[in-house]
Length: 320
Ligand SMILES: [Zn+2]
Image 1 (cartoon, rainbow, N blue to C red):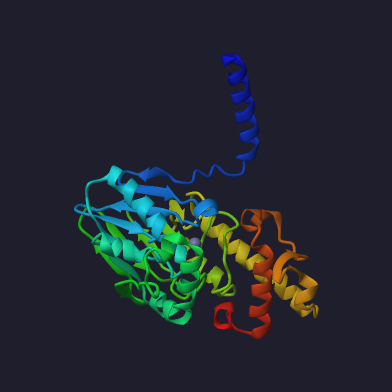
Image 2: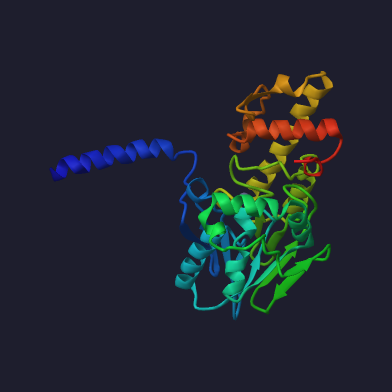
């Protein structure tokens, strides 16, 4: 009996092994990147959560991204196991629910939520509509019983916001509009650690609806110029500069492939097949070199890029 179980388990591991070759995703686990810097991989598929990064300063902790409320609670529980220091700052890399709707949880826990001013502007543009939609769809958002999203309490503009207590320095930068108008990056120059939010993801997780596909590669160039040793994305596993370079290459390839079709006089219906009103398939193909970023959202990304190119302005500026 025991032996049969072992054989079955071994066979199971072999099967599992074939599924996890492309990715070693481990949702809801915490990994130390460097002493005092932890990467918590969020469960995107099951719970819609983003990744969180926890950075230890001399007297306090900084958390990257507020996550959804349930993600914030899970991150807080894990953080208590890492350190007894309080969370003083929580940085919203952008305004999306999976990165900012947990703000009230962190505020209640005594932290100051922080973001580029573009995050507040994006919330003014899209809220309370999205919050109210999420309140109906998600128990954790609905349970907060709030009328709208809580904007970050502290903001910065073109000049980076800096935390430096002599033991560690974190710079909060805005490099322009890629994923959203408020895209923020956390950069630790001494350790070469860059937290990118969803401006650079490790996998097929790009949402282009509020984005600026044409400008996205330029933002990635500024991020790559820092020469990060560790890139900690908003979704997908931690890695190195290849995440930023790959994201740049993907956006360049997407824009140029769709541009070529527009120049040939193709219509949206020639490029994207709809199913129940939503983009389900596309005739556009990208090179193998960017396949890490091509997945389920790809037909929607092609549609958004087509609309951006034909309207002559960023997709985020179009009514949606
Ligand atoms: Zn996200």
